[in-house]
Length: 331
Image 1 (cartoon, one colour):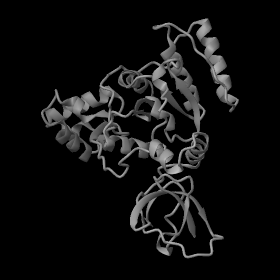
Image 2 (tube, rainbow, N blue to C red):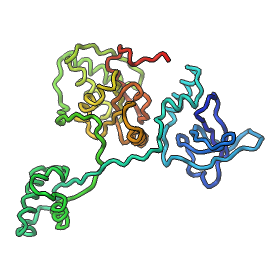
Image 3 (cartoon, rainbow, N blue to C red):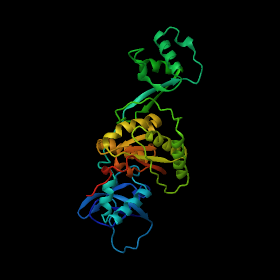
Image 4 (cartoon, rainbow, N blue to C red):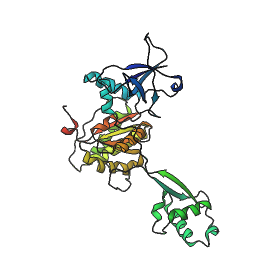
């Protein structure tokens, strides 16, 4: 097998390499590899694979792979090719602009213990001589849904220990979940998605939803003064996209707006919302990018660079305050 590789250099072409048999099952479009380029080893991006090649000379072999998952899909690669041609910029440089730097940086998100009531009716006789366990179990039953163990810190100094004891007796279900990093810094109550809209807002939403259902490029200009409910319309439109198995990107003119608006969207859609802007740490950006590639994030809220988010089945792009000059760059 042979692979076409794009390198982050000033070249408009890709380069053909032979794939070693040991890597044959691992090479796919969208992963990074290390390959000899000149007299040095360089990271490049696999953009195509072939069973045969017309090249008659000696081809160099790929040395090894960098990623265990794709960091770019076919659609994003097509965009890179188009940008390279339209803006007359080498393919590798366009790819370097789109892909976050230090993608190999490791980021380990925190985890938290979650607890919920068992599917079986509680056998109170198991804890009749354990007042703290009894108190905690009653509190868990009142919640009626899964919740962080840390919420019960006011009832006991060691809620996890007590929950483990309850779990061992089959009275609760205990699980560990990844804590999605909340870079918003804002906390909102869960948003009631059954929002009440005016007649004009309903008309706007109807048109936007019809455009999404058509699967055709359908631009809409939404005009409204501050406080007129544009964000609520954005949220309703995103909900429609998600209900139809699609994803959404919400662009904001300033990085400073991302945490607050991102918090609003997280209150509506929870951990399916990711943030994206240049002020995030390289490790968090790398982790977020890979989560987008794997389909864990369905909605991305961010500054202009979020337009390159590798979401699958994109159905909606919102450009808030589109007239702002911060979306544009001349150099």
